Image 1 (cartoon, one colour):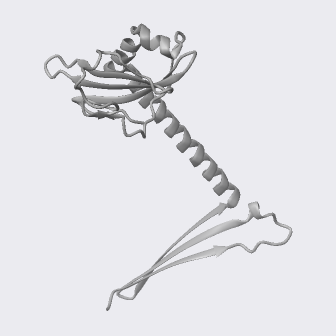
Image 2 (cartoon, rainbow, N blue to C red):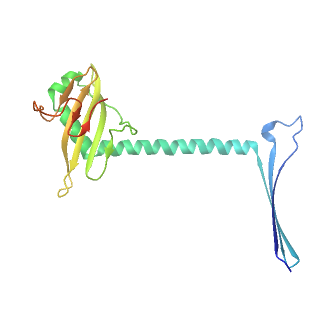
Image 3 (cartoon, rainbow, N blue to C red):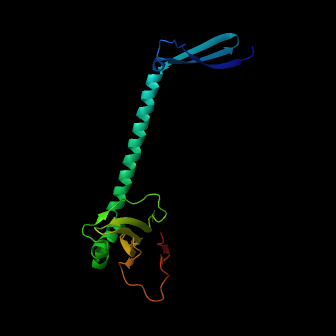
Length: 194
């Protein structure tokens, strides 16, 4: 009258003969469940055969699918940055500053993708701090920007736009710093040191 349950999971592999290539070997998973309720046995037997060729195809498909999803996500995140108001304000400020454009050797001005893992790139609902890689015909550098969102108008206001050229030159695109301002490389709480 006792209720017993026994579970057994076994793995069986077909014997591979010397004349059978490894990719044609079948793997067989056998699941056998035996239930004995009041001396009335009940057995469920499930069997699944999968060849190594099918497993290889599944692994390749999964890898390609995952890579495609990651690539699509990266592309969409970059497009979201490029279409944002705080990004567009900073680039417009750079393009309208003749000293900065001349130091880069622009036009042409090439803007690269933002490094998503860079600690300088921090965006939330109220503020955005990003580091945009740019390059002109002569040299390149980074455009450090900081923007704040106005809670009433929901528009972004550029607070900092600083171009750091590879040769070490720093150009403030908004205004020239006062003599008693923050030390070089540290502007309005936004660290611009590389």
